[in-house]
Length: 315
Ligand code: PLP
Image (cartoon, rainbow, N blue to C red; front, side, top):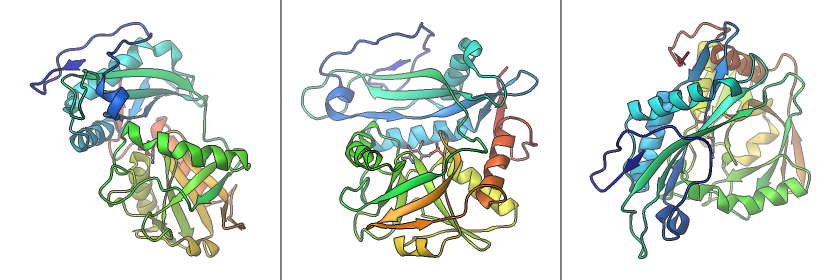
């Protein structure tokens, strides 16, 4: 779908997967005017396709677009595009329990602009890829590295939206952490370098007794749809959930640490390394992380009743 200066996206079309052409002056290529989303389609035992909270993803893209001075497709247009993409790629949706079809909506300033300014034309497109099952019982727990030099986001910036410009700047820290043998980076706040923010593409939670804590989404942290869902699931299971600043020093006392995101689901964190000290947490059978993860996957794959109406059946 394309949109010109009037801000309205006109009816788009399905085309075969392939390269797209832009002017070298395209705003997204030069000035990073772009927003991404990411959501999954799962196949239920009866063959039906299930989409998890697409309205929330549409809404987040809308908020991100506002921040990046872009028009956005309506909620209906977004969901329609995602559905059409899933239906056109039905043969690529893995069988139940084997994975999902990941759909990537992309909103970009496609029109040419030389001086810094918003693009004269925007493009909204979606594409898809089958992905494996992240949430396996035997999945190796994550080992996180606390990054102290580079920050992911800062107050007044775009950390709270899924701007394409958020990901390039964290690659250096990510590559360094991976070369040291860690699975991912845990970012700290930019002011005090003391409070937990999030992981490269997932939100972070800690558990101590019956209390689950996660940093508040006050502008520098992406408000994850999985994060929001896990907060509701955890409260429903009787946990006390607090959205509050968590100091890196509190990790010494945490029973469990886990990450949430569309890609990882609910992933156990086995260790966090901060200034050379490795803090370890409970993982595996009978953990809260596992209970929350299997409830979420159960809802997403139609095995557990969807009381909150999070699921849309698309086929
Ligand atoms: N944080 C960042 C920076 C992300 O890119 C993502 C992935 O979308 C998340 C958190 C998790 O968000 P969600 O649960 O909506 O996938």
